[in-house]
Length: 409
Image 1 (cartoon, rainbow, N blue to C red):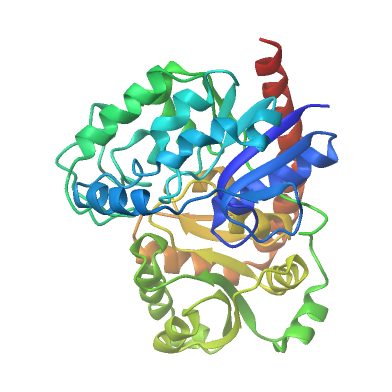
Image 2 (image 1 turned 60 degrees about the vertical axis):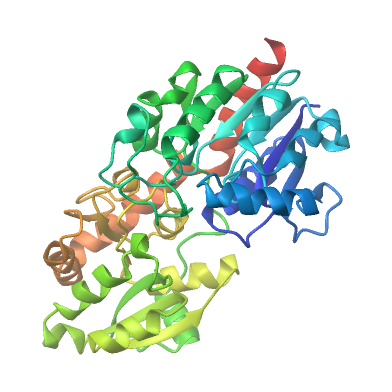
């Protein structure tokens, strides 16, 4: 039986989309007969197949203060080199790195970890080939060396601009590593091919979605359970911190505020996550705030109750919430950025607005809410595409093919 070790920030659902995607892959691989274990900085699974990476020591705390002062956020984790002696590492046939840029792992240790074992590096953003950021927006300096960073406060933020040095350190790391790159979106695949990662094989494998956990449910029943009147038009979105500029809370408020008053009176906004009720209130639209939801069933009910899922991001890879919406047959509206067009396909699964153009975003909401026939067709398309292209077993089989080729090489 093939043995695969996943290394990521979290072992479950508590640390963002990358960790959720890793966990879904881990489970799907197990269902395909692959034996798996997880090393993570945050542990919530009770399983013995998941274990915490030891990330605390006085020396590392000191090194972190020094490294952070000079704009180098991750190289203080000298404990990463000790993972070569960890029982989980020794057990594995192949390693799969995921989210490793959150201050718990030293990327300089990748050569040591891949010297005797092949590894896959699944990219969940741009961090692997930039001088610090996970999304570079309009900056392309990552193609030739970074430096003079226009976005030092972009996550993960830096106190000093040493992005040129970090870029060189990453380039050295990759020149001494045995990696195969996996990118979930066509957009990220294209960027990786232009980056310092182009010395490795690069495979495009989209995230998988559980199309049984996420599927269309009876809209009227879902609305009844959630307390939404059937005569209302329902917009759904996943709220984020208003301070997270990338997620576009300000763009959403502007877009909703521009809707005609007559339409606003017909709408209720269904909100998952944090702070979204403030946005709806300021826009003058009734809202139903569900808070932070982890239950697949409750999320499926929410998607099924919605006429449209709206996602006002400035930069993203392959958002899991859009995959979930698609699997539940709910058309989507978003901006034409990053990997969004893989999922939001104009006149097929939703509406793509021009990047950061809130007039365009508002027009998309109006046009789709007014066209019941087009929305009905999109609902069918969403579900069919989710099953055909994004089912979990499709993703798992593609990963297994890569793992097998690396083990037998």
